[in-house]
Each structure stands twice: as C-alpha cells, then as structure tokens.
Image: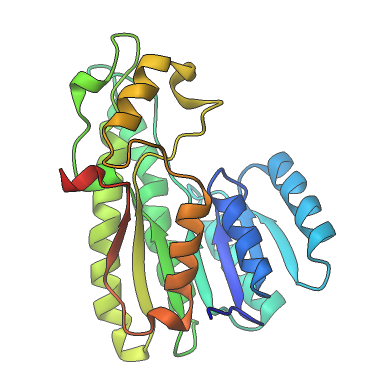
Amino acid sequence: MISLKNKNIFIAGGSGYLGSVLCEEILKLEGNIFLADQDIKKSELVIKKLQKKYSKSKIIFSHLNMIEPESISKNIKLAYQKFKYIDGLVNATFGSTSDKLSQLTAEKFNKTNQINLTGSFLLMRGVANKMKKGGSIVMFASMYGLVSPKMEMYPKNINPNPIEYGAGKAGLNQMVKYFSSYYGKNNIRINAIVPGPFPNITKAANNNKKFLSNLKNSTMLKRFGKPIETAKPTIFLLSDASSYMTGHSLIVDGGWTAW
C-alpha cells in the first residue's frame, strides 16, 4: 500500500484544477503540504476546505509568482523553514496565451516560458539542491510537449493549443531527463506526468460542444480524464513504490499519443 505518512510535499500550482485534487489525495495518505500558488483567493478556499477535513496534517500556503525568481527562491526558503526538509516537489504550474499563431509576439512567447521553462528550472534546482537522499520531484508536462495539436479538431472560432505552451512543455520533458541524470548521484528521482485531455468543462474553450466532442473522441477511451487520474500517478511517483524510476515521462492521456 502506498503511503506518504509524514512526508512533506511542496506543490506549486496546488490550487488549480488538477493541483487541488492532488493536495487532498496527499493529505488522505497522511502527508503534509506546502501549497504555493499565484491565485490567493482560490488558494484560501482550497486551504480552508482542506484544513477542515485534515486538521491533523500540516498545511501551509504561500503566494508564488513563477515569473519572478525572487518569489521562487522566497518560497523554497520558506518551505524549508516550515518543514525543515522537503520529501517531494510537484510543479503543476503552466503558462499559455490565447493568441493566434500569427499574432503571438516575442514578448508574450518569452513571458509564458518564464513560467514553463525558466521558473520550472529555478524551482527544480532550488529544491533539489537542498533535498535529502530519496527525494522525488514530479513535473507536470503535457501531451502537447510530445505531439502537435490536430488542427482539424478545432472549429473556426477556437484557436489551436498554443505553440508557446507546447514548446515549453517539450522543453520541460528534456529538463526532467537532464536533472534526473545530474541528481541521480544524490538518489533524488525526477520524473514527469504527461496529461492528455483533462479539460475543466466549465471553462474549456467557452464550452464549445463541437470542440469538446472532437477532443474526447481523439482518445482511445473516448472520454476526458478526471483530476484524480493525474493525482494517483503523481502520488505513485512521489512514493517509494516508484523507487527505481527516474528520468521518465509518465503519459496519462487515454491513449491520445499512441495513435
């Protein structure tokens, strides 16, 4: 049985659609969480709910801006001050725009990948440098870091999945391999979760039914993923159950990339 009892887990983006479910699953397994997120209001709601249900666990929130190196280093310092040590890091943050390819500026492309690449690099390195042997890091990548979007799937009123997002997530997959090689001597494992279609239906592409149908039918299982279906594989990678896995990108996409 997988256990995270007394494990201290730093979760960047922990108030998001996938991150908030992961936080609860970690607490169910008796772990502690340092939830770092940019959205303060949403985080307060998530924290309040979790503290009510898991009063015996240690739950800490801190505001995090992945674009600012100072914010990243401040959060790492605070997490180690509060917990003394970190057993696991999960980075569930991402950046993207809604701009068309023809209109995307260099400034917006670079700003987005300050989150996907530069911020992820600084967060991974900062935590790993202080981790004890046996630590585990899990980065959230994307199927669009492995394959390109199917253009015919998108109705005319919806932009395809943005290039800056896919490019950033592709780079993240490579960083996972590089970091796992570099920190392997310290027995620190670094892997990626690669989600497929996990749309938040209330927000997905203005709830365009045609697009959502195309998205769902592009999977082998003919359905969307549920947040719990990224949470459990992430917990597996954080736990000792995956003690001989590192440098791996674990695809959770309903078969999307296997066509």
